Image (tube, rainbow, N blue to C red; front, top):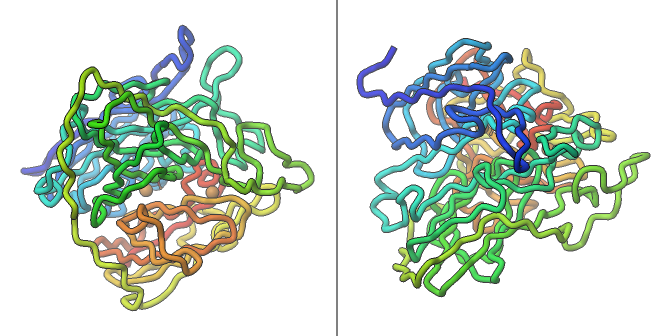
Length: 452
Ligand code: C2O
Ligand code: CU
Ligand code: CU
């Protein structure tokens, strides 16, 4: 069924194969491809319909991360697509121009499916952004970078560890792939290059910077443009978070984007198996928050000198979030229990049959997200682009001055966000909120809310 004026996308999920190490094929999952999937380009205001065929021999779901849409179209765990069947949601693209993404949201199986490749970017464009003179030619001066780490076994096949440590800390690999490619290189042809970075890893946090110490201009967060370009030397993204930066190549090159891995836990980072877990003892948190390892993300090559145009000084107008709009405050406490055996929100693990919160449509609310555990959690809310009010009373950093759908909550910290669900109600079908460390989500650090 297609309505007039709907733009149709056909997505077919299937098993594939990919070489993560040269000459060794690993089993993967992809969308219209052996691994990952096509970038979907949508326009704000248009109606889209997506025909999603599941060619796997297991169930799958596809969630449109960052989108405001009816709960039935959300692609969360309740929209299971059985093997061999088709799911055809349709919705209006409502949110602002930005980088979003789609990925598996299978109940208790999101971690392994995303790890196998069921994830890809979505570009939303709109008039407001196009009125600005920003690099926007896909693949030329505007490129998506899906950053993922993967672990290979001794034979060179991709490996998803199931042991308790990996599941508790979240699955991390020691090799970095960008859009599925290791040691990715980009040949730049323009003086300004726009990088749309998605941390599509299951659990690893990254702190991105340019190896040469040069600054980047941060222009957008999860939900679109910031008020103006912000000069940054480093940029931290947790799983699920996105950012857009503009890199100026007119000063010459080559240039490389690198990342360190900020410590998301109490001395327990640094790859599988390191750190002390036994007996509930944890190492002291590293003061610098880093393991010291530097990952190459992207090498940018220039074949000739390039001229840069000027970036606009102002991008969009963003009012500061006004907490006095809120009619009520909801508190959500994230916890991991002893040894990660109790991944919960407000003391309860995700239960498909329990609705945890009922939120009135159209009402401004403050959600107070508190982290009772020793590890940082990227907290994600479906069907919303929210604003960060503060973290432990402190003003948020530049990335968090815009619209967000995923926000880091550090150990023992409390983050307040302001949000409102503007339109869609459903008496039965819930949306999710959860930790975007996929192993935590799968282990129960997820809850359900109805918009009523
Ligand atoms: Cu990106 Cu509920 O997920
Ligand atoms: Cu989402
Ligand atoms: Cu978590």
